[in-house]
Structures are given as C-alpha cells and as structure tokens.
Amino acid sequence: MDVFDLFAFYNEYFFDRRLEKCTLKWSKRMTLCAGTCKYEGFGSSTITLSEPLLQYRSSDELKETLLHEMIHAYLFITDPESCKFEGGHGHAFQKIMCEINSATRLNITIYHSFHEEV
Image (cartoon, rainbow, N blue to C red; front, top):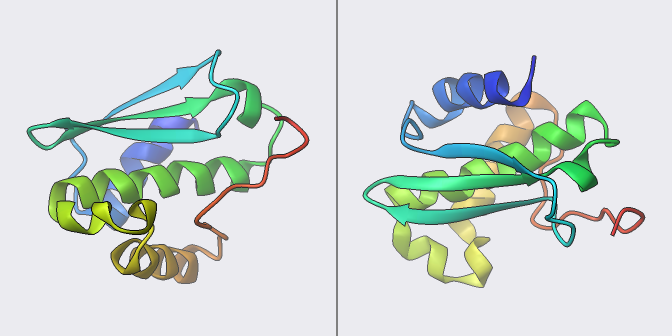
C-alpha cells in the first residue's frame, strides 16, 4: 500500500473522513524534519513528507510519521485551540496518539529521531 492509499485508509478509519480537504505531498528538498502539517484555512491543510528522510526508513516509521501529521491536520479542523499549546503536541494530540498506537501497535511519538539521515 502506498502512502496515498494509507492516508485514505487512516482518514476513514481514525479520522472519520474529516481530512478530505487535506493535501498530501512528498518533498525532495525537506531534510530537517520527516514531516510537516500546515493549516491552509477553511478545513484544509497540507501534509508534506520528506522523501530524503523517509525513503530508507521502515514501513512502520513512514506510517508513524504520516499519522503524526494527520493528527495535527485533524486537530487544526476539529480543535484549533489545542494546536496553540506545547507546539501542537498537548493533551488532545497525545490522547489521539495513544489511541492510535493502542489500535495499531505502532509507536507514534511527539518527535522523530532520524539523526543519522539529518
């Protein structure tokens, strides 16, 4: 399953299709972080994943990065106030992160540690 199929699956399964207006893209130039999520307004956001940092990582690490950014996108839409605290990684973020980790046995974290690639 490619990352765009994963996005569609996770959007339906974990986010109640609330990320329909969200754009997902790869960046060949982004090298300081594995992923970003930028709120675009009107219920939309753009998730950008780093091709250089993620291309040699495991499937689980790609999924964890994608889901991390999807949580941000979801909170931008459903609870924008929660995004203003602790760099967007406050209680609301951590609650969703723990629920998804429990359901998937993945290990989504607040920060990534891709030191070798950086």
